[in-house]
Each structure stands twice: as C-alpha cells, then as structure tokens.
Amino acid sequence: MKLSSEAAKLLGQIKEGPDAALRALHGGGLAVTLLRELYSNEGEDYDVQYFLAGYPETPSRILEELSGRCEAATILALLAENIRTPKPILQQLAKHERVEVRKAVAAGRGISPQVALLLCDDPDAMVRAVLAENPSVTPRVQVLLSQDPVPFVRSALLKNGKLDEEIQFALCDDIDVAVQAKALLAPRTGENCLLRVADGDDSLSQRLLLMRAQLPESVLESLLFSQDEQVKREAVNRKSLTDDEMVGLARGRDEAIRLKLAGTAGLPAIVQMVLASDSSMDVRTTLAGANGLAAEAISQLVASGDGNVDLALLANSDVPLPKLADVLERNGTEGMSCAACRQELTDDDARWLAEHGDDGVLYQLWYRGIVLKNVDGKVLRELVANSLPSIRALAARSSGLTIAMMAELSRDVSPLVRLDLAKNPETLASFLKVLTEDTDARVAKAASASLAAQEAEAAEAAEKERAAAQEDAGGTPGGTESPDDASGEAESQESPGLLRRFIAKLGRK
Image (tube, rainbow, N blue to C red; front, side, top):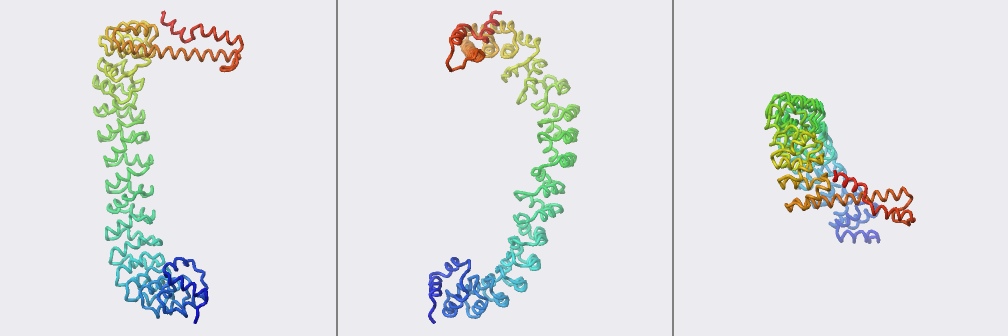
C-alpha cells in the first residue's frame, strides 16, 4: 500500500536517523492515524520499529505488538522505557534474559510496584542499582533495596530524588562505612536526618558529618555536646556560638576549647570572668593577651598574681597601663620594659611610661620613634636635663616644649638632639633659622625643610585670611574687584599674615 505524503515524509526523516528523528519530535504531536499507517506499511523495518518504540505518543496497541514482533535488545529497551508500554509487557521484559532490557525496565518512569518488586530480586546488581535510583519506586521497594547485600546498590538509593527520610537515615547508619559516608555527605540528605546522626553517640558518623562543607546551625549545636573531643572542637570552630554556649564551653573540661575561647577577641564579659579564674594558667595567659578585655576580667587576671599572666597583660596593647599599676609594681623594671615593647602604644600609655619609667624605658621610647604628648612639665624638664643624648632627643621631638626648653635643646652638644628638634613641627621659626646654619648637615637640612613647611603653612593661612576678609567686604575671589578691594589686597600683600606675625612674635620672646 502506498504511503501518504505525510507518512512518506516521516519515513524519510526516520531513515536519515531514528535517534535524530526522536530528538526532533520528542515533544509529540504526530497524528495517531499517521503512526498506524507507518506501522502497517513499514512495521518490519528496524528503523521504524526503533522510532515507534521510543516515540512517547505511540499507541499502546502498537507497542504491545512490537514487543512480540521484535527481538532486538535495543528496541525492547526503548519499549521498557516508554511510558505507554502496557504493564503486562513490562512484567515480561523484567524477566528478559538481556541485562540491558531489564535495566531499561528498572529505569522506566512508568514502572509499577509489582514490576519493581520483581526487579528487587534481579540476579544482576546493576539492574537493582538502576532500580534504586528510580524516583518512581515506592517506599516499600526502597526499604527492600536498602537491605540489599551489595553496598553499591544501597548507596544508589542516595541518587533517588524521592528517597524516603527513614531510608535516608538507615543509610546514614549503614554497616558499610563507604555507604554511610556517601549518605552523610550526599547533598540531598535532609537536616532532620543529619540532626539525628549528630544527636547519636557514634563518633565516626559525627566525624563524617563534619566533612560536609556546610552544616545547619542546629546540627553544629548538637555536635557541641559530642563525647568525642575532636568533634566538639571542630564544631566550636565552625559554629556562631551564643553567649550561653560559650559560658558552658568555658566551664567545660576540654582545655583546648577553653584556650580557643580565651584567644577570641571581644568575648562577652561573663565568659571572660569564667575564663579569668580558669584552673589552667595557659587559658588565663591566653585571655590576658586577647583584645576587648572587660575591666572586671582585667582586675581578676591582675589579682591572680601569675607571672605569665602579668607579662601577657603588659604586652597587650588593648589594656591601658594605668589599670596595671599593681602588675607593674610587682614586676619592676622587667614589667616596664615589657610594656614599652608593646606592638602599639597609645599616647596615654606612652605618657604614662615617660612619667614612671627609668632611663631604660625612656630609651626604648626614643628608639621606637615615639612622640610624647601632653607630658607633665616637670617630667619634660627632667628629660631635657637628662645626661643621655637619646633621652634628650626624646624630649626634643615631644609636643608642649617651652621656649626655654627649645633654646636649651637647640644648643645641645649632641647633633642627635638638635636633629629631633629640627624635625619637630612645633619648633619655633626663630630656632629653626638658627639650626639651618648648624654644623651638622643633617640638622641644617631638616631645619630648612621644617622652616619651609611652616612658611608654606603660614602663606596658606594668610591666603585664606585674605579671601575671608575679601568675602566679608563683599568682593568675590576671582571676579571683578572694586578699587577699595584692590587697595585692600595691596595692603594685605604688604603686611605679613596673622599666623606669620604670631610665629614672629613668639620667636622674639
């Protein structure tokens, strides 16, 4: 019988490649009459059989006839996967001698519970593994497969998008470590399942849990109470701890965890107080070196009287030195030297050290390039009169020098002292002019640079003063000026600026 033009066109497309034809027509839409015409006239053709077996809208009757007509495993596999294939045919194919046919049945979306139960006992483990991955199988079938003697069949269930939660948990507790690990690390494993494992007492399972890149906070919270110290420490590292959790851990028996907490900056005061009275000296010492210590914790640590804790407090730039008076008193020179070596010194701490430290401490301040500010006048005079050039140099770079002190330092026999005075931005211009002619080239160069900086600053201030005066007089900088404005500008240019007059006046005193 001659094919219609549409059937002939479809046949030509199939003969060019049945797989390509199936991809092109996977959305369906072909008339049933057209498919029946094609089957009636070309039903013996392999390519036609292949196409009809794989086409999603082929009538069930044709598929049933194809199952009895064909022997090719490839076509039978397509029939097994076709959603329209009758259930009795699937049952027959589930017993087929070819493994690839049974695997296709196991993977089919239209698999029935009866066929799935039949395949649970398939002699080939690969068939059972494919069945385990099929989201269409019922929970009962999943239960049977979770008890399969072959581990990779059980682990195949983890690829099932509709795996029952109880089965999931059973796999997390599987006797085979490989299956257990895959279950605990599987992306689809739910929070409830992970939490049940965390709440258990199996340390191996808990360690496997911690191999996950991300864990819910509820799971990490449960792991904080693990009997396995390693698990607990890792959970502490990964969880955002609440104040109550930190207090509980600070009172716990694991010293490693207490040490970690003690080294954490900005701990709540209540946690600091618990750790400040810890039985371990290492914990207290670590806490003493942490930032953000509360006043109560500092007092508690100071009261401990332990030498290592004292040194940690003295080295902690975040603890003001006035709060450590007792520590400094009992540690003497060593304590002062330790405080002077702090990585960072605040102006208040530097002033405190200058007012209470010996020559060794003062030398350290000079060596570190510290600039003293707001130092008591009496102490500053003592620094200026010190026999050591380095300490006089420390005074020369300080703020708050009187004219008398500048005069004395500008005549100092040590170029080291005169150099620091020349670099001091507060040194008066009159002294800088003298130092520009210093016999030491470094001093002269530094004084010239400082003097030039002061003159530039004075000129800038004068310009701002002129602009402000001009604006008050109604003029507009950069615009057209009145004769009065012009005469005012000329007068301003002839006279020194306010800041320059002030500097000159101080220099004459």
